[in-house]
Length: 346
Picture 1: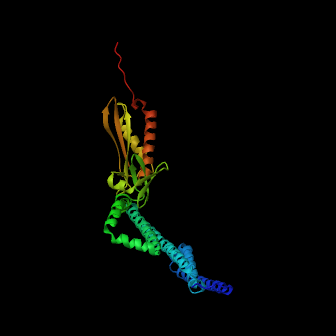
Picture 2: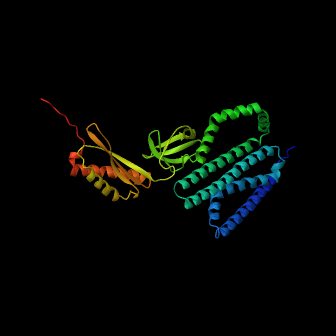
C-alpha cells in the first residue's frame, strides 16, 4: 500500500536528489579534468569531450535523478513504477544520443584522416563508403533505441513475441519492405560499395551536369552547376545508365566544334589554337589537336580537342578557346566564317 508523503519525506527526497546530482557533477568534472590532461598528449580527446558533453550531461542527469528516486521515498509510492519506466525510456534515449555522438565523432576523424592520406578518386571512394557506413550505424542505433523503448512496455513485448513466432507474417512484412524501403536501402549500400559513383564525382543525369554532393541510404543529391539540387533515388543508379566523368581519374578531354567556310586556313588555325591553349593555365599539357571531322552542306566542321586536369578546368578551357578562336577568325580571316552561297542563273 502506498504511504503518505510528509513534508519531511519531501525534504529528504530533495536532499537525496541534490546529493546524487552533486556526486554526478563531481564525476563529470573529474572526467573533464582527465580529458584535459590526456588531451595534452592526444589532442583529439578534447574534441571528443566537447562533442559528447551535452549528451553526457543529459544522460548523467537522468540517471542521477532516477537513482535518487529509487533509493528515497518515491520508490514506495504506487505511481513510482510508471515514473520509473519514464526514466528508463529517457535513459535509453539519452544513452543512444551519447553513443551516436561518439560514433559520429569517430567516423568524422576517420574520414578526415583518409582525405589527408588519399587524393583523387580513391579518396572520394573511401569517403563515400565511410559516409554510408556512418549513416547505417546511426540508423541501427536509432532502430535499436526505438525497439528498446517499445519493449519496455509488456504489451509490446507480447505483440513482438507473437509476430516473431509467426513466420508467415514476418515473411509478408519482409517482402513488402524489400519492394520499397528496404530495396532502396540495399541499392544505397550497393551504390557506395560497388564504386559506381562517389561523393565529388562529375556526372550527367537526365541531361543535367553536376557533382555528386550527398549519398544517403535511400537517395543521392546531385549538385547542379547552377546551384539547383537533383534528388535521385538510389535504385536509379543500379538500374539506369549514367554518364560519369571521373570514374578512375579527374583528367578529361574537352572538345570544341566550329562550323567554318571551306576557305579557312587550317595551318594558321592550328597554330593559333596551339598558342591559345598553351597560354591558358587551365591546360594540363597532355594533349591538343585540331582536325577537320566533316565537310558537307557548304561548310566544314573543325574539332578542337584539349586536355585538362579536371572538369572545371576543362569547361574554362573550352569557353576560352571558343571565344579566342572566334575573335581571331573575325579579325584575321573573316572569309573563313560560315556563309551561305546562292547561285542565281538568268
